[in-house]
Image (tube, rainbow, N blue to C red):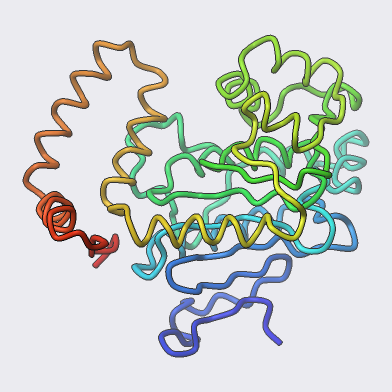
Amino acid sequence: MLPCTLRSSESGPDDYNGVMPYEQILFEVDDPVATITLNRPDSLNAWTDIMAEEVRDAVGRAATDPAVVGIVLTGAGRGFCAGADMKLLSGLSSGSGAAERLTTPRQESVDPTGSATSSDFAGTYTYLLAVPKPIIGAINGPVAGMGVPIVLGCDVRFMNTDTVLTTSFAQRGLVAEWGLSWLLTRLVGPANALDLLYTARKIRGDEAARIGLVNRALPADEVVPAAQEYVRQLARTSSPTSMSIMKRQVYEQLHAGLGAAERESVRLMGESFTRPDFAEGVASYLEKRDPDFPRLGT
């Protein structure tokens, strides 16, 4: 069985331009949801260079697939991601050259950052913020270390109530890696961010939800289904074009003052009045039916 699942009615080998099946992730599209599953369950989905390349490629394919309204990122087995593979960390500490490999950007076959207008969102993992579709993190099990900035790069997060999250870095003599100081602080504020970074203490899903780190804490068996249903609800009710623009507004305007953000919003509002999505949104409301918005890329 191929670890990369294609939609048999619409896809074929040529759709992946000769790319070999994925080794360390699963990728499935079930209109309107693309699900990417980290697939090294024996190591709690510890992160590797191969996994990084495969996730970026799969995100890029989902971003350009008109059937996909939103992307769910989760883990196989009982974990989401245990952080960097310890063999890689050992290589870093021994000076084997792994540090250069880890921090050198790689060219990917598919660019997922179609809506990016700022180099701030061209990072190794912060590219997730520039993907023009909603990304939902389904934290099914423990997440630690570099798994944390990756899941915080998702737009919305659902977390298993009984699982744990830990930043880990202080306990390894490391720093807030991969933009975590920016991501974490904007979600939970500086005091909570520094507490989680200083202590690397483990917090469970209910606390993560209470401090705003995740949107919902749910029983383990409900996390992935809830994330997928969230995307299906968006597909039924929300304009993909509107969501793409709003995602860009939210992240890019984190850098802007209120005045600049308001002025850009007025400009974008004027543009929205001219789109078919606006006419359909008004008509569906008046006719008391779900809207029929066009997908991105159609």
